[in-house]
Image 1 (cartoon, rainbow, N blue to C red):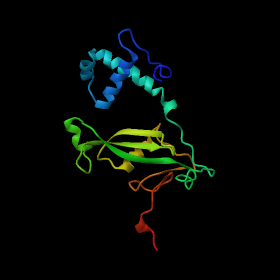
Image 2 (cartoon, rainbow, N blue to C red):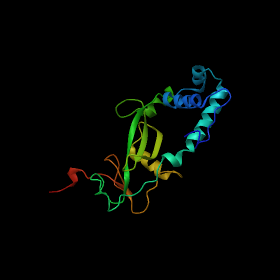
Image 3 (cartoon, rainbow, N blue to C red):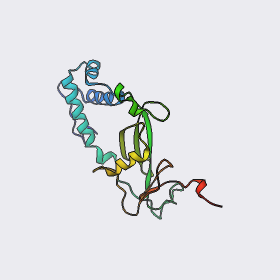
Length: 187
């Protein structure tokens, strides 16, 4: 896909597989340019250039990999979703452990004292990602991350009359439906 759709090409001295391996290794292990160069026996300039070319190729896959949400219709036969007419999917935040620079560790410290980043993920009813917003510090509240996702120029959009399901960490608001707690239901 990165070759055909993204336009990434091997070089005279590097195969396409090695370029992608350097890119994935950098992202997966949060490694510095110098470390990647030592691991793959490449210069810092080569690592930087190939990382950026691979990143551009991956970004071109956006339309192919991320789908636009389709609301649930009246004709839905899926027992899990048929009661949620006009629902676009569900969203939630998750914490992923990271190793930030020492001076930034307090920002990334979670309520349970681990060091993590907060990632917002939005999925369609068929469990495909619609939107992902990584990079928030672990101490950030889910609602704050969602507000940021909505306010971005290319951020999360909710079409008129549609909504996403959210958990109790979020508030009920236009376009977002959270569960009602038992304490609010009177007998």
